[in-house]
Image 1 (cartoon, rainbow, N blue to C red):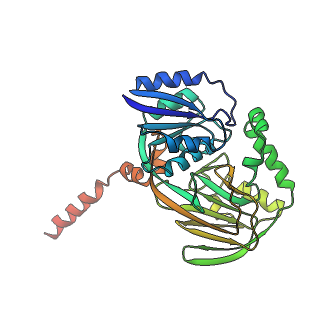
Image 2: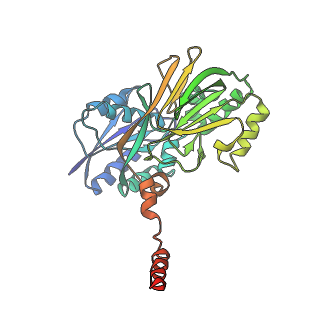
Image 3: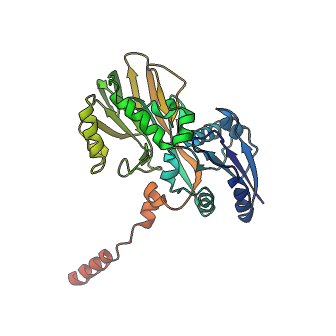
Length: 328
């Protein structure tokens, strides 16, 4: 029988009863797995659990986006990596939404059992991994500064309320130099968003044509400070790709270097605060990190699946054959 370890984070944003875990055990047994359930107890515990696990066939983290980040970080520190998966149980659950999960906790595991193993790209900020998003500046501290109590009581509304407060606060510009795709730029920016995802801050299709296996991540620099410009840019989101919005500078790359004129204060990484505070940040990629995920969104998320699903052109070969006959 295959071995599966479930790592459950009871401190994730969404308040739920743990009786779903009994259903998880039954589902895993029905699918040929010998399940073990481990509860995480403190921040960083999931990373340590994954790092120390004996070899097994599948590890499923259950919690918020930061929960999966810890599992990925622990796996990268192993000599031999394990096959990871993730089921969302946090507040925003951008990673879960991107992977194609719904709101039913039990049905999510069933869809995973019918899922596929894929290789994805993992980004790093100064060697610290992030799965889907990292950033600095305006609005970027909301995910980790919103209180846990508010998230338990209000869910996503807690983020919205804190975001509204931040909207009316003065916007600070940060002087920096960045190097991307062989070019160097200097300027003043209100925030930086670095991602490898199409579902960010609860917004689906935040970017067009984002793939988890193309060896690239997306970068957005913003220099907007006036409230009316920010509102205008948010309205753009309903009709256009944000990379085309005035005041935003968009890149696709596999490497980014950022140098601030002064030491930065708070940098977000998968919804948590990056502990390191410095003036220089190097963002790079790790390729071929194996995960298991539902089939629902794989054609949208993976280039190789898009190629497989592309309909064959049966007309062109006939045209070529007719041309050859005519020539004869």
